[in-house]
Image (cartoon, one colour):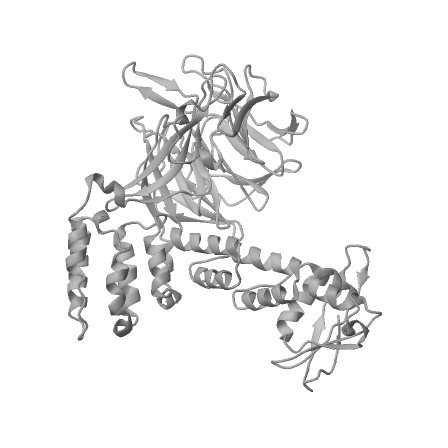
Length: 622
């Protein structure tokens, strides 16, 4: 880069450097010098280099396009004054015009976004808005919400408010929470989709807000307490309410009545307090596919063809949680368990798996995942005591499978996750069915690259990418010549190439399903290796609190199930669905349900030498 000076109308100059950027259109290096003259209140654009900067600005900004191409006087001036701009923000936007990159942090993103809005820099504006949505945190979400509301950005406002609702406990502990207006706080705590571990957290948040300025805020306490759902509290929790409310009623010379109204509402609990439950409906839903369960009447395991989805998450009394499961449909072919599922471009793919308990060799046990518009099926069991090292990829455009670079050893019972376009594989059984501690990065062309080993050996476990890390939980581990439950959990940092332990699972989850929903790690179902009892529970790990929560029970099959996230049409999630259980028809695969056409399509079988090995594809069209 080269430096230059320019004088502005304010008589004060700011000196800065402009990096040399590579021009995408011409494929050559183009030097650019930029100068901004000004102070805290003004700046200037100086014409240099045959107007190349004006061309770049006109191409990047609607504001400058109008200024330089519509005959305005600035198009003929050698120096254009910009008295309303600050140099750092304009420098960031000008640099983005050349490079497509904006260096952002929470200390500067709002100012740069304001300037991008003012000057109509659409590329830079998109980068700023994406930063706010992707990097939003508990200590910045309220600022994002205020900014979005002030500038009428409805999508960003919805995202920020939803972040507050699903992370209310963490947000209420920040200093900025104390600056909320009373009416905004009331809107949050009255919202049905507010998620808290228990209703006591809502009460404590209100109290902390009042105690930040008791003289001014105590008169508003009665109104705010109407947003606290006291019937959802246990007697032990309500004792804390009684002590705090009675103390606040005696504060100063303010006459407020808090405990009496809270006691009246607490004592008026309806059966199970259904009318008071907080019901959260995430935009994406957890979909369960297949699996098996024990039939108590016949004493046999029964594979499932069913698909279920979690329509809502309900918070009841105390720590009681419940998931509202709805039946989505059925797999069009045979029942299956220990199969693979993946979602690619809005379509759900089901690959491989066992189909019956009596004939367990009808299909291979395989894990499948989506990566850069392809499906990958890695390793798995092709017989009861034989696993494989082959890797196949599915091309949806040609409806065909092909082999890619194999693993360096036979592997099954592993867990796989995609993080930053890298394919990570942990644990599993080797060819002798010994649980492994290995972790490696797989590439379809280069093969495997081994990383740091896990602290604990495990197989038939879960692994999910969350907040730039890989979380591993559940499964079995070696116990001499046998296996036992592995309840220890650990998280992998790809930057440091290191593992760290986190809270152990409260109960075993062997052969469970897992997803990441709303920045939380869900482990669903499975069984206990020691006594083979089923675990129909759903546990969720919150990285912010470092705790596991019991979210409720599964509906249908509970072991060897598979799960994924889907965005379903809204009419499938409405309260009144008279034909919800009849969405799928066993005899006809092309049916209409309301305005939704549901279709099931056979894909080409993968090349693994096992009979009846197939992939099915589910999709819906409006």
